[in-house]
Image 1 (cartoon, rainbow, N blue to C red):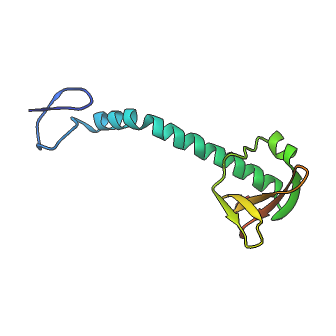
Image 2: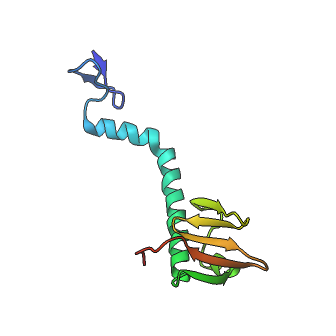
Image 3: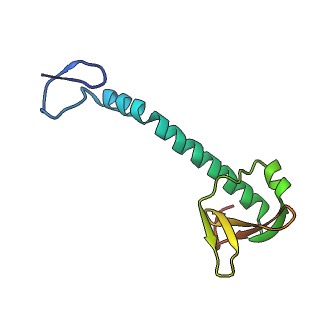
Length: 119
């Protein structure tokens, strides 16, 4: 006879059964995925915040802004979704379709990669 991996109760049924109930299965999986889930949630939240800030500041699709303004709004330069280096050597960092290029003297050029219906 097998026992539930979560609560230790004896189980009847199929020989490959691991949990006595959906509740035990969920509890077991939640415990084992907690660290991974927290990392993903925190990363996604930071990306969402960065995206909202870029959308707020870059309403026209292309604008120049000071690095200090982005930092003051809570932008975190460590969280991006991709980097594109164009043939001319220009490096743009993107958070989804909102991107930026670091210019001289603490200025940032904001761009939108393609037309978006986001606010």
